[in-house]
Amino acid sequence: MGKTYERIDGRLRTFIESQPIFFTATSPLSGDGTINLSPKGVTGSFAVLDDLTLAYLDFAGSNAETVAHLRENGRITLMWCAFQGPPNIVRVHGRGEPVFRDDPRFPGLLARFPEVDTSLHGLRAIIVVNAELIRDTCGYAVPFMTYDEDRDLHAKRFAREDDASLDAYFTKKEHVATSIDGLPGLPLPLPPTPA
Image (cartoon, rainbow, N blue to C red; front, side):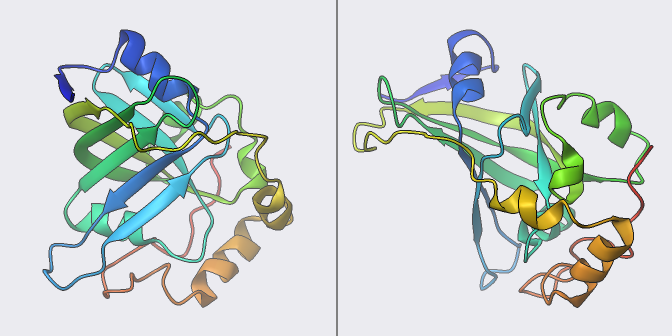
């Protein structure tokens, strides 16, 4: 049955760091707002910064719902499922913040992701999450699935963009600067990639 943890360490940290995919869930404060659920999975794009702080790289996409919701209220849940090995589901409920390219913390945070060539993915921000509730549950109904490899389509698509063309791409997308519910999303123009 489920267990609550005070921190992310030991077996729990090992489990989280070994999963090839995780999910994020956010929502606006409005009762009729759009709830967002997103898969994340580029190898090396997730890091446990300390026992209560996690971070992941936010790459180019068609929307910026997570960024918009975090800017409005900070609420976020991260979830990992065991698709191989013993069954398990881990959820981290907490407060998140998008750290944008022009934030003085950005270069130091980016250094925590040495495995990822961020020039291939249109890096927009780094999402930092402070854990408030850490729980696991049985995961008995989660199916076995095999991880083969990362898809290369995202890197192929965004590797050809520079800061100016990436900004133009985001500017023409309907739900990047503003969320589906009209909340402020990714601040544009896009700041240049820090040197």
